[in-house]
Amino acid sequence: MSYKNIECDKILLISDTHGDNETYKKIIKKNKPDVVLHAGDFYDSKSRDSFDLDSFKKVVNFYIEGNHGIKEKNIEYIKKVTDKKEGKTRRLFMYKKLIKDYEIVKLNGENFLLIHVFDDEKYNFFCDDEWFMYRLKLNRLIRKNKISYVVFGHSHKVEMVQYDKFLAINPGSLTAPENEGQGTYAIGLWDKKEKKFNFKIKTV
Image (cartoon, rainbow, N blue to C red; front, top):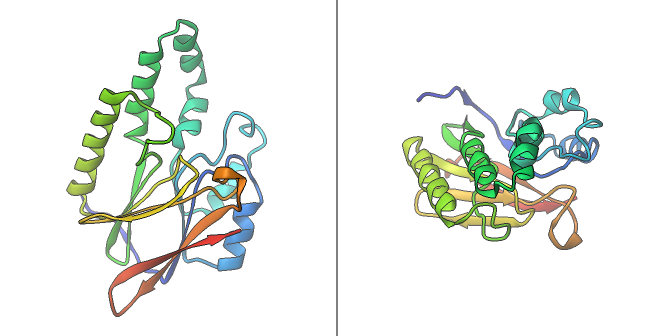
């Protein structure tokens, strides 16, 4: 599959802002990135009605829903299976939705995979069988599209891990960080000599 390439010098990675309408705008204004990627959960049940989606779309170039977005869009179904205590049905539904909730972006010739859930150790979002199938499909997605960078969120925890073929980055949460610390985000600068992005985690 071919994706339109975007040439850029600086990119901003954010995630899990959970309805905040101001902080991400301040970070964008401060850093002046060429491209902004959001790894999901830009709103939740508490902020769905107050979240300014139009303003969000004007300044965030690429984004995905995340588990909260998927849940809110399918809230009646979720309530239905929850009322019947069909936990497995609910998890399978979320697994099937989450693996389809991704975006592939080509920046300076490098393919980025934007997906909300990459590492599920903290939240146990799926049971073992579902997690195995999710990772299997995720790995196929990475290999098939020759992904160089995986940008994810969900855990609110900063992570940056170099695998054999790609770098996985979780910028943490901009507004609801793990352990109630400072909010975090990531800045990627293009190294013209090395032909790659170098990333640094920053605090709000």
